[in-house]
Length: 336
Image: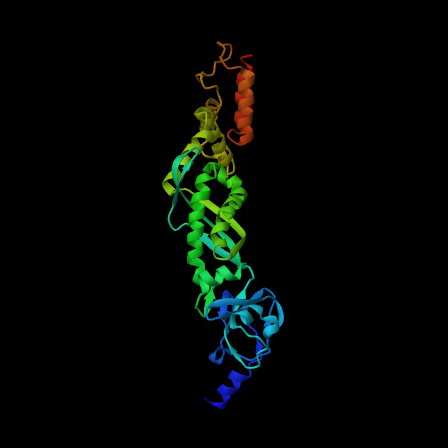
């Protein structure tokens, strides 16, 4: 054995750990696993350290400075049957664990989850979101996910955690009783319900879930298209009213163009024709358009003052020029 190795082996008296981002556990590495009697073990905030003897989890230490000797190593002392304070180095493993919260982890459905919706029947849903976790109980975490590994990172256990989330997701969505169409307004409740479903799965590994968020829940594209069509029909409702609405929209857009509606035609005659067409669009659905009566002729089913009011609206919208409006108004007033 080289002198350097001998010194590093015999005089280890300070044990501390600086974790890497995403690191959950690491075995402290030193020559022949020999720790000097009276060594100082430093455990920082959000960390924990344990002494492992021949695969058995022995003494555990929280944040602070600890002296490794029989007085504060009761479990290991009992395992070794030391009847007096030992003076020589002893062989064992020391593991450090990070207990800080691991944030902004993603979860999502690799395949759609089939559930029975209260309104839509059997549907396939996709869902995505974020969650966080932390190591809460050292013993089950060490036994189930660390074992003899030298180091455990978040990325090493994420696949297992996502599988647990998917199982909880199917259960939570299937038994939540919230129709898909109401999920968007109940995402907070859905997040809480899924967190409750996820907690037991994580607890078996010694983990807890401080936060769990559902960011989106979606249907397959084909189903969503049918829902969009159905929604459009409900919004349209009365097709006659919808046609009138479309006509009014066209007038507004045309009026914004250079020259307004009257500028579309070749002259005043075209403007008058457009005015007649638009006036017909605003008539009652069952009311047939009547030709204008000459002065002194028969009356019309449409009240002249009502027609004047409608023509005035067309003039304000830009569909009729001022001259066209005045001419039509004079013609209608002659019928009174």
